[in-house]
Image: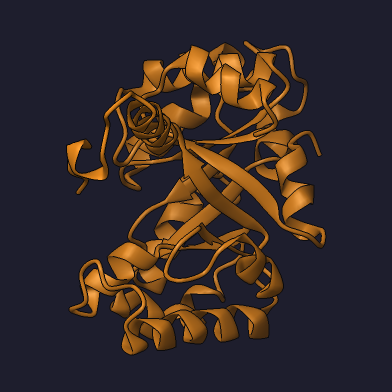
Length: 263
């Protein structure tokens, strides 16, 4: 197994991760050099396209970190392109049914196990053809597939989704889940909390690792206690914004009312 994240997800303990929204390789490298060794490149809501994400991933890996790519969507073509460009760990958003889960997982795997298109000898994922057995074994053994559960429909179908072979973790998205239940930006609403608990119970019953973001009234210690394997808890945009606000507040004569508003 050549993807350390796959074995880390199976081991006890929580893996802390940082989001990268701007796809800036220098910023990503700074995060890794300062202790955030797992970086989630946000291709769904962040900046850039595949080649921006590849450049960012190269910086992370050169600094000794591990990369997870959150795809903007789970189409066959996008999964194929990002695998070929060398990504091995993925979060796929808005997977709400077993049929969707089966199609997504199949797209990550070569024929015999799935329907990924073949160009193994000439892609970055195979080391430009220098990794013997890549298409037959390595490409399957090292891929990490995390499906996002972030809609009430996905919660209703979660038992069926978890019966699909090849899923490495369920990534719980509390913000979109709350919105789908009619509680946009109210993740602490009792109905949303009940949905979170239902997801956690279902995944525990299936022995499925859980990942999520920090929030919904639960911090690092809470999520660790609940058994989450991976938590994406900070992002570089928020870190920069918070540091800027703190620095601004240190100016002589500055009052709380002088600070810019926040969404």
